[in-house]
Length: 386
Image 1 (cartoon, one colour):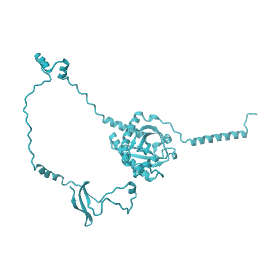
Image 2 (cartoon, helix red, strand yellow; image 1 turned 30 degrees about the horizontal axis):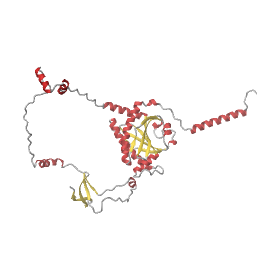
Image 3 (tube, one colour; image 1 turned 120 degrees about the vertical axis):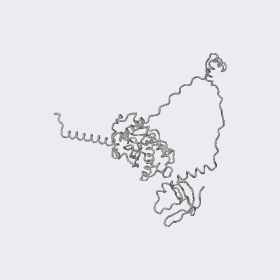
Image 4 (cartoon, helix red, strand yellow; image 1 turned 30 degrees about the vertical axis):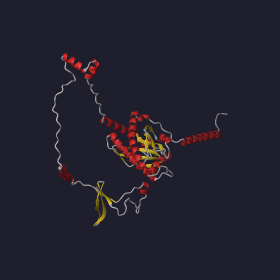
């Protein structure tokens, strides 16, 4: 009646507030980390275009290297350069995935990360092991990570060579470090790389490997590294400007024949008119008599080349050549090589008792048999290969 609340009513209101707060906190927990706004002004459009061109050329050479590893047609499309952060990237990409971190050891300072899908890594690894790309069952293990690290080492090595050409400086990388990452387990990317905690550059490629892979891979750059890459690229372009185009050739004066055609008179008539007017006859030089004779050459001596050869051979007598004795050869797949252990017997392509090959600087020159000279092996030449 007096407008005051009883204790029971106060308790009821307090309990209602607690329930509401708990509901709100539950919604916040299930919604995940909210993506922070991205400042697009951190990287200009012209910088994005230059970085995209650099990435396009680098990945083009990497695709060629990957083709040689998997023996399948590899196509990596033109990249798309955007700014991103950890929350927005994890919303758009499949999980779990493989993070491959590459650090630059010379020419550039910084690192970048390649992100591949787990299933794609299994297919690439199976192809590298000599399979058909369908053996993708089971969990991703250390062998998969080791194989994909080696593939990325060769691919990014080719990319570094392309960068060296574009930027005009020697660029080298450290061996890549691959790890399987469950994006759900990380609220921020700082535990993987410090630059993933803020805004970074995301370069997306579409990668196709035969009819087995049609997927998206990503390359992540720190903002500072991307700007350094852009500045180095632009400075190199300014220091090596494109050659100026040659000026257009000066047009030739009209020929006498064209003048004759325009005037509608023949050559003899024109000469007669010019002679009557005392004008020189253009384009009609007087032929002078010349003494033309066939050229005379001295015959070569039959023993000249042999004498010259004997005199010059002494100049290279002290050049060292590498002599290799080859017992035999064979070929093994990566899986068979990984099974090597002490006691493993490897069968070669030579039959027992067959002469062995002697190579000089890699060229097959002779055959022979193995002998023992005191405590060392030797070779007795039995046949010279002509």
